[in-house]
Length: 257
Image 1 (cartoon, rainbow, N blue to C red):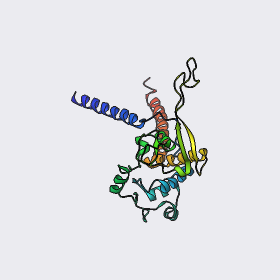
Image 2 (tube, helix red, strand yellow; image 1 turned 90 degrees about the horizontal axis):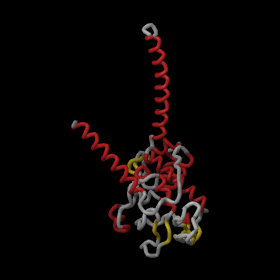
Image 3 (tube, rainbow, N blue to C red; image 1 turned 60 degrees about the horizontal axis):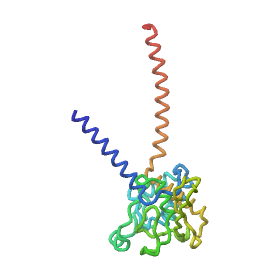
């Protein structure tokens, strides 16, 4: 009886953590953009690795991932790793560690930038994708920008040169008697208007963010592709074994029946 109660308590605790994680991931406004990650797209993940190392790794670490693991999984040689992806270390066996001192980061931003190894597992790929797309100009913030998904974030909009700057434009409510086709009378979601152009077009910037998010999805579980491959083989074996076991059982019991 005690074991049953203990098992129930563990299940309830796990369910509470899942619900809490989902609630935390959806903090701020509703996610305006839908994103389906594609970590099996090696070219996209390679571009995402380049993006992360060039724009994110100066502040954010991935302490649970090594450079040579990236090279092995993504087909990148050690020479290319050192030339294009390694800016804070000389050894391909090292973990990805930010060069920013934690104490100074807290003084500059009020909080040290978090490790991003499992960020997409914690918050969801959709959340990360939307977060990188929804920075907007806010003169009331110390760094001049705010974020729709994570309001009052300490992180500046480090990709503003690529995306450009945008302002948040609240949609007006429909007049009485009118109903928006998609919203059924509710207010439309927030919209953005460009303030300044970036180096990338809006579509190219979305692709940039998608590649970066795909890399972060890969980084959160580097063994995913191998696990799925092995899982398929195990399922196939079990199906074949089930058929053989059934035929053997029928052969052994045919005289009894």
